[in-house]
Image (cartoon, rainbow, N blue to C red):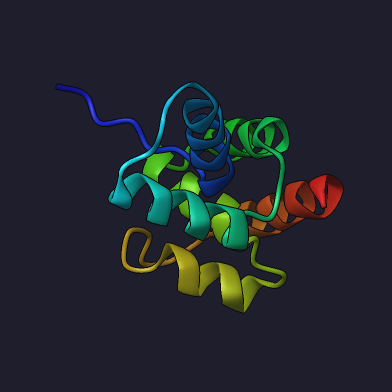
Length: 104
């Protein structure tokens, strides 16, 4: 079974669509409430940003974390990717921050 990581905004979109078709369970309702509160981008923008970050060689799981948190500087970005990436190349970090700046 392949695990797929999705940004909070995509979870929000999926759960909102599901809630229109049927009543959500307790866990799904709690997840939707969390997603509504914490998603920072539309699902489409989050997907675009995730793809751009992955194109730099960043793992999907780490890219999703970056998309959800949207760090604003290199120190924040390094905190988000650690321990998955022990030392983030400054050039790649700056490119990620550039992508984030464009999408905000």
